[in-house]
Length: 122
Image 1: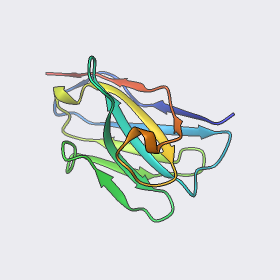
Image 2: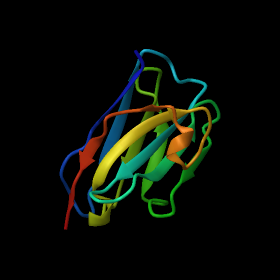
Image 3: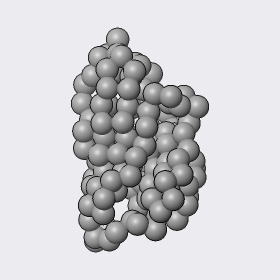
Image 4: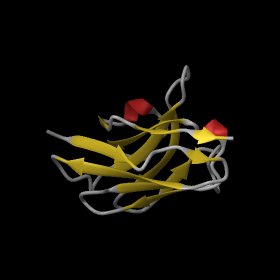
């Protein structure tokens, strides 16, 4: 059974930092792209960042560019999201996902984690 599981979320003050991790089991994602999405209460799930696991190519949403960094890990933890200068508007449930290519739309990703909450207080 293929599973992705996020960790590292938690309450943080505005201006603070967090690192989210994504653990994978059931298969390796070495040929995949890994992405991070987020969903705030009452809003649609939105793209945050993505990385090609094989080439390292990265792509970011404008709202996080310069503050968040997506990076590759290893087979068990294929992707991380380093979040700096957090703002209250970053408050959301953050999801990692895996798909065949770097993309910013949810339908391009085949595997999803259950999400980890990141509340940012002002």
